[in-house]
Amino acid sequence: MNRTATGTAAVILAFSLASCSASELTPPPEDGGTFESVGDLKEAVESAGLACPELVVDSPPSKFAASSASCGEFTYLAIYTDDVYLESQLDLWRPGGQRAVNIGKNWTAVSEDPDLIQRSLGGSVLHTGP
Image 1: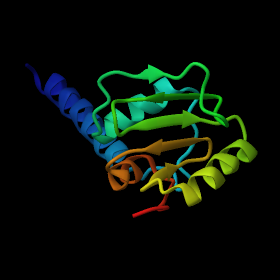
Image 2: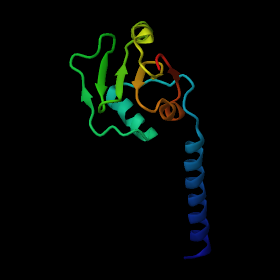
Image 3: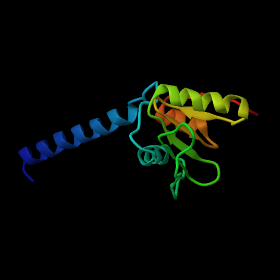
């Protein structure tokens, strides 16, 4: 390999490494952002490190959700069309004793590890029960 090719390869490698480290350092959106579907939310939750081997979509969705699904016994995901429906769902859960619910702009995730989801996806965690 000549000097020009070696220098070009080094520059490409440096840019590649810089772009990887920059994306890894990007914090999640403070408000948790939005998701188009429970499938998209499932992918994000899995990227956070939570297992979701099989997404079982509710038909019809839960009372206030545009779409909802479960990933096993302890993980439940939902997408909402607007703030009113999301708030109505949270009002229903607050006295009901859900242990913890991750909340984004248009989504909720109930799981055994809300801190893991919050670190990756942002948003807030509502603790409602023991």
